[in-house]
Length: 366
Ligand SMILES: Cc1cc2nc3c(=O)[nH]c(=O)nc-3n(C[C@H](O)[C@H](O)[C@H](O)COP(=O)(O)O)c2cc1C
Image 1 (cartoon, rainbow, N blue to C red):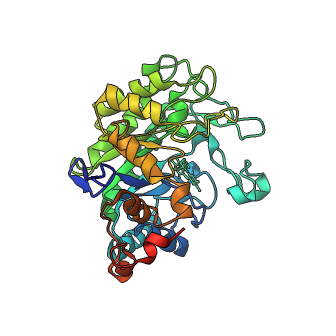
Image 2 (image 1 turned 90 degrees about the vertical axis):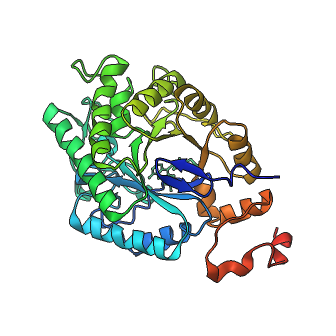
């Protein structure tokens, strides 16, 4: 059997050795946006997971765009220098290509870390004012964001563009934009969070106007050889919210604005958003975006085992799969998937003796 999951894929001028991606995962372990030793350890480990690509967590383009006090940022020279050290480290010791997810938390900013409660910060916890498409809080008890003016939009767009330039300087192989999970760009697109009655609200096209402007500005500074991706929402999982039809429309608009690939995730636009937990729950939306938009698509969400991942790609439902929790649970997930699918995978020379061909124990592992 020849594995499709372990076959290469090209995104712009970047070739990935396989279709397995480590999904972006916030670590809440930065100091004023600056990566710490934890990032060296965490990302260094996952750079050796066998995945073709490792996406660095949501990295915020301005200070007030961070979800928590511990979120990663790329809005200062200190942020850039620290990330450059992490990237050099991962390249030196690891095998995965490196992408960065650029984000702005919008009305979901100024929150506690998950282990502190994930609630909005109080004044005593150094809360900061948030911004959004409309003066509507994420949910009861959340900070009411200030509805953004055109000057705010120009400022945020410039922050995304500066962070994209810094990402290229740092040497990332790919840049991704966060258009999902209720954060700023998603909140402009969803009718649940965007109640504007100017040129940036109302119809789908108007709600897309600001986010698409961000994409065009970012594309202008990310050379064509470097793939630009976007993580979108396949559905809001709330009545009256975005659906898979909107995901297809988003995919087409993003493609026209210069995006090279789409990741289809979902949920989290409001606290009422309840998403399924069955295996591959975002795959149906990903499949539609792939077939109806004609650009490479990555599926994410409850993809946990090698045969399931292989089937998603082999059946043409997605071009790549991203896994998050499965990689935290097993940082060598792709080594074990390669063993199951009888495929080759890169591993560091120091660990070469764990390859199934050299270690009879691999066949006995439970
Ligand atoms: C600890 C943790 C942090 C996460 N942080 C991010 C993030 O920074 N950006 C993002 O788009 N998704 C984030 N997610 C969502 C994951 O990327 C992924 O979409 C989700 O966990 C579903 O995939 P899974 O079933 O493979 O875990 C995070 C998930 C986890 C578990």
